[in-house]
Every structure is written in structure tokens, then in C-alpha cells.
Image 1 (cartoon, rainbow, N blue to C red):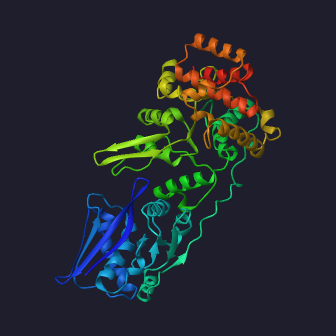
Image 2 (cartoon, helix red, strand yellow):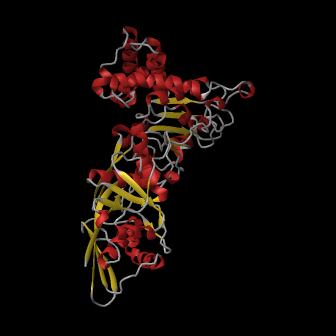
Length: 495
């Protein structure tokens, strides 16, 4: 007898449909799975056998062949367990699977029959809707995440034994409710950064326009403190962005399925490989830049990172996506993030201008060699950070995140009106940059800087984008001379 169910497998952060066909016929007892299963899928035979027996069903002592179609697609992960066990009992005559027509089943089976959560429930629910399915049945823990997908019904079950209701022609499970975004009130506040007016201004500009920011200064000057407070001044994610970020996090198995309106903040260790940073491996998996999509990627101790890993950031910073090509296929992953980095001026961290620095010029040059000119040219804001004075540290706290966030949100609304919903000045194309209005004095100042420093075309455009963000924060129309001067000053520090 033959039975068929539908499930999904993950390819990177994309869910692909899998048709599970099970045939049970007379012969020597055996259980074979075909269709390019990985180790986790092959081991499903033992999980399914134990779960079926422990939930009170009779496991057929016949020859069982399970086919996972399409046959040329590699099937990975334990999410196929539930569909495989259901099709098996349907083929054996233990369950009537006709009520499951138009439904997909997703979940991993424990030996006692309980249904465990899996990665990528939201991506699979969206793929089921795109494939014309009526709904999906998922583990209880995955229900709030999967229910975020619009236009599809989501039922949750805790145990495989609940599928016994199919004998009466009833669907198992309970209707899932979409998760509510988590509270963002526990984020560290920018008021903790005392003094450092120039750094605070750079943080606000970077948050408003989604510009890259590089802070250079001695240890303990407040670089990391400022970077880790950037999420508190960023506008919350919109509804579509919440689903987009949750889809990536769920497929990569981070955040434990929790949904939040706070923009992602990723801070990988400096020993991360190029594959870990931008994605890769076999099969390919998303890297830190994809997990930071719509948020911030913070690289502390930038000069300690491997040069190949840093150079791999150049294309994603320009395009907003990364393409991973392997012999088995290609994957294009989103990676529109703001790069925030911190670095010391030399190996000892004091800087060559400090009398306490004992680093030779050659040692300082080797230390900075990890940063290529092409990478720094893609960072909009470069800020020199000095040690705050004792009076500043003992003084009152700085302006809080709430006040800064209000200005950032107001500036982003102006950008959305000019460029389109969800876009910032950092996303502006060459034609859009050329349409920015500049006062004659501002245009003259930029032309002088271009001639004096022989700026590249990229640097010229990035100065314009930063100047436009400064003008948006001030609520002004054309870019004025003072705003252009501030943008040029941030670019000058990178030279």
C-alpha cells in the first residue's frame, strides 16, 4: 500500500518542499529511505520506529520503502520525521491520511513520541503558502514563529499520538497564535557614554543613515560601550522586517525562536573565519553578515581579524547581499547591515602620538595592514576617540537613547519619503545621490576637498550620503556648508 505526505527541508535560509512517499508491502522486514537523505534523515528510521511503538501504534513488520522527492535534492535535518511517520502508518493502514490533503507536516520525533521543535518553521510555513497548501502542522514550540506567516493555517501538536484523531477524520492539534515582539526596554542606554560629543554625534549619524562607522582609539575610551548601545537608538523593525529577520534567525537556529522588534546586533570574535563571517561551508550556511541583516555587525579589535575575512566584506557592503557558489548550486543571502568597528591605533593601543607608546613605526604599520584601503573606503564615518577626562566620567550622564531615537526616526521618515519605504541614505544609488540638493557653498567645499585629497568616486558619493543624513537630522532642505564640512571631516579621518 502506498501513502504520501508533504514536508519541507532547508537549503540555507530557504525552505524547499519535499514529497514523502512510503510503500509497505510483503517481504523481509526492512526500512529503507531513498532520495539523497543526510545522516539525520537516515537516522529517522530508528526515531520513527520507537515513536510509533511508544505511542500505541503497530509498527508494520514488512518491507518499507520511503522515497523523498525530488530525488536530486539533498534532504537535511530531522524536520521530516513527522511526515515520514505519518505516511508510514497511512501506508500500513493504521491511519487515514485523507484529512491531511493540502496540509504539510513538520517536526522531529523523540523516542517517546513527543514532537520536538526544528529550525526554519517560519520559512517552511511561508513556503507552504507559496506552494498552495492549506496549512501546516508543527511542534508546539514552533507554533508562534510559524503563525507569523500570513495567509496560512498553523496547527500545533505535542505528541505523535495526537494523530490518532485522523481515524475519526479529524485534524490533530490546536490553532497557533503568532508571537508578539519582545520588549526592547532592557537595551543598554546611550546615557552611559559620558563626554565624547564627537563620538555621540557619529553614532547618531550612523544610526540614522545606516552608515558604516569605524572608531579608532586607545583601550577603555568608550568604543565598545558606544557600539553596544547603537541598537537602543535605532528605530524598531517594521512588520515586514520582523518577519524577514525572524525567518533568518529561525532558519539559522538562533534566538531560540523568540521574536523581537529590536534590530539584530551581531559581534563575532576576531578569530572568526571568512566562511563564518560571510557564509559558506558544505552544505552552505548563512554567516554573521546575514544574521545581522537589517541591523548592526560589530567588529571589535578590527585589526586582529584575518585579512581574508575582512576582504570578504567588501562586496556585501556595496550590494547588500552575498552569493555563495558551490559545485552543488548557488545561494544568495541577504546582508544589508551597518558595519560598526573598533580598532586600536597600534599594537599597544596607546597610539604613536602618546609618549607611553613603545611600538615601532614598522610594528604599527604591520598592525594596520589588516585594513586595506578598499575596505576603509567603504566605511562612511571614521572617528578618532580619546580618553575621557576624570571630570567627564564623574559628571552627569549624557543624552539618553530615547531622545536620540526620536531624532533618528524623524530623519528616517524623511529618507523614506525621498527614497522609498524602508530605504536609508546609505542605500541611495548614484542617480539618487546626484539629485540631492546642495547649497552653492556646500558644493564648493566638496569640490575643494575632492581636488585636495584626490577622492575616489566612491568617497565622493559617500560624503554626499553622510551630508544628506546630517541635514535630515537637522530637518533642513538643501545640504548646507556646515553639514558638508562635518561629512568631509569624518572622511578626512580615514586618510
